[in-house]
Image (cartoon, rainbow, N blue to C red; front, side):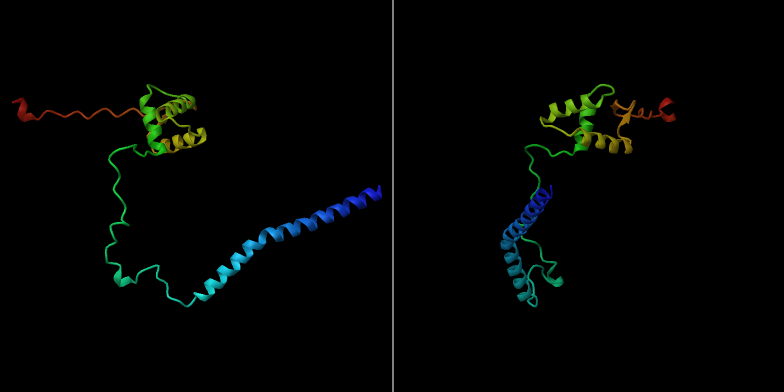
Length: 158
C-alpha cells in the first residue's frame, strides 16, 4: 500500500510541475506585451495629451459628423420591456396570468422573453401603480378613474 501511496504522491508532484510550466508558457506572450505597454506608458508620462481640448476651446461646436444622428422615421420602434409588457396587458381583456402574458409577448414581438425578467418588470410597474394584481398569478391594468363631469354654468340655464 505504501508503494501505491508513494507513486500517487510522485505523480501528483509531476502534474503540479507540468501545470506550472504550462502556465508560464501560456502567460509568456501576455507578460511580454504587458511589459512593452508599460515601457511605452513610462516613455509618454511627461508628454502632453491631445485627447481633450483646453477649457477655453470648449465653446467651439462639434463637427456635424460626430453629432448624434436623429432617429429614423421608418423601421422598428425601440421599446423597453416595460412598454412591451404594458402593451401586452392592454391587449388582453381582464386579468392575465404570467404564462398567457409570456405567450402574448412572444407572439407580438416574435422573440423569446425570460420569465424572471418579465416578472421583475411587472413588480416594478406595480410599484408605479401602473398595473395591479388580483391574485399572485393574475395581472391587469388598473381601472381608469371615471372622467370628471363638467357642471353646466348657470348662464346657460337661464
